[in-house]
Length: 247
Image (tube, rainbow, N blue to C red; front, side, top):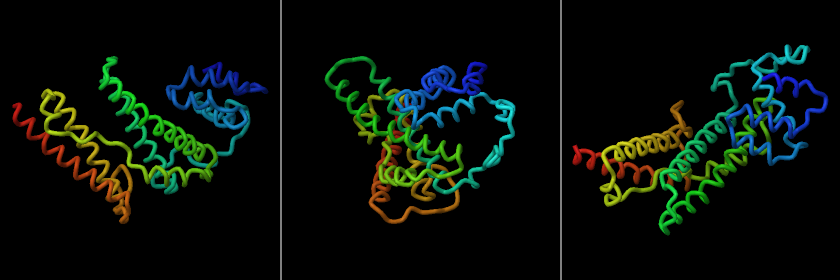
């Protein structure tokens, strides 16, 4: 990390050199792409903050000055503002959905048949807006941890995210499931169970994880989630029946 320390202590802090260092030492490729495509005037402070985190040493040691700690190093989830807890949930939900689509693209293989090409195109088009929103919410969330101030853009983005039902595994017909092997059925069972749990948590706690009861109020979004939940429960029953038949 010596080269990062050198960059941080330099007077100029060349933005694009900093981006190269971030790409070299950080695993978050989406955030790296965000910096690469961003403008220095807008993203320089955020880039510097992320590189400081990568050094893993005290800022006072790094710069030879006393840094006032505005907030404790370890902040429990309960201590965070509600809007930031919502942002963390949204980031997790989006990351999970993006990862699922990435795996589905991989499982499609490299065939150029009409059906596979159509499925591949659909997944890519569905994934792109999720990646864009993930990057936006993630960066605004991290901006809060850097400054202690909730970005004004964050509530609107979270409202848009709340109104969007993140894709869950597609509805399975009995015909589709019958062609799956025992191992594939077990994987499908696990995926459906996870999806059911997430929707139940959103309906009961308005969060992806369990917490204090906070039922979702009546709304079009609640109706969509309940319909999706019923569909997934039907799929789960079909999968269990087919697993029993293959024993």
